[in-house]
Length: 100
View 1 (tube, rainbow, N blue to C red):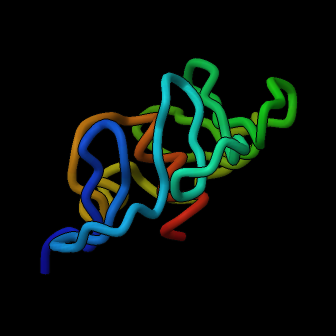
View 2: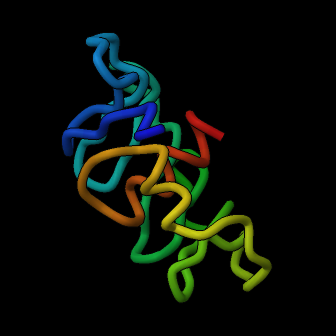
């Protein structure tokens, strides 16, 4: 079937479309081209907004897990099959906030 979304390192779009769904600047993710932070990435942890303590998910052993725990949400290979492009943590965060 192929990936439905494309991440080029800077922005997430639907495949074969140009409308930006989310943009990435450094370790921060923004909805569309907004300046309000939707999420930020601290190592293997995905945090809500600008917070570094409000962890919503983390990556462990090739799985996306809930909060700081090890309760599996999905496998990274499933995320890679939906979003084409580089990255692990960034793609997991994009999937969590915009694709899921």
